[in-house]
Length: 215
Image 1 (cartoon, rainbow, N blue to C red):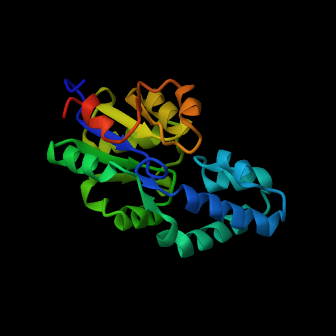
Image 2: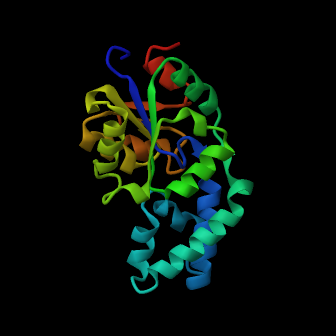
């Protein structure tokens, strides 16, 4: 596949950095405050991926901003203690950068919080571009964030691969005309992600190097 792929776009949470426990605990904290005893760990798994405004807006449009603020306050306070690294990510990103691939983050997080995670995991120096929630009108699965990243990188969809842990990532890539790769370590499960038919399924991030012919 090496022939024409020169650009790799990555989702952040659950793909490059393990924020799963942070996100789940933050949702549980926030929802316990507003809906005591109503939500369990399993209940909040579908909330990983959509924006906070999408999730809380469906629950209570009147209190969505209040709930988002509660979420973000707790999330920032507990961020560094709960975020972890995924095996194989650092070596893969380092190799891709050395080989000259153009790398970008495409996330539904706010830019400041996304950079906080990247810096914590020492990944911030590898990425040329970040497209975050505050940069677009429409988030994944709409192709707008991917088109914006490609434009900033000077890349075309047919030269790019979108990598993510959620159906939003796979569909956004398909909608933009890129190749797509799902990650089998998605908290929603390999089978769940496979239903959306990504072009590739990564068992470890290092599989990316094999797919690209860089091993």
